[in-house]
Image (cartoon, rainbow, N blue to C red; front, side):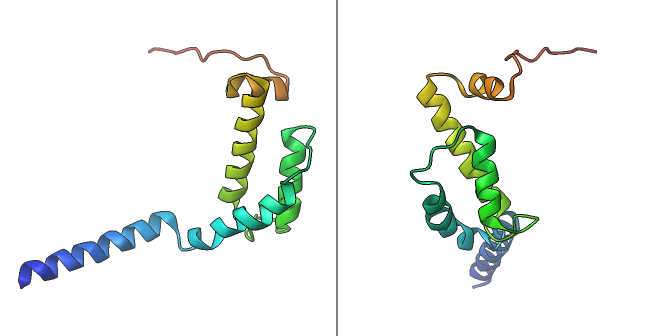
Length: 112
């Protein structure tokens, strides 16, 4: 009997740790991505990623992106960037470097 109680306590502790990592708002915000944000950007043509970012930040309407969630907005922006890079037939890093006007370079390792 004592072993079962330890296992149950361990499972409850693991659940508490996961909720601390994921946060309680994760389940509330996922449907908002699928409904609010999807409806706002579906079928619209954006000139660049900055225009998309402005549109979804404006949709949120809060200074700290609390209504839709900053991570949800970041995920949408990142997914659109990946789709646009794929449509252009370029790797993501090359597409993004062209968007910001900086030549793509490989990082140079340093040693001490």
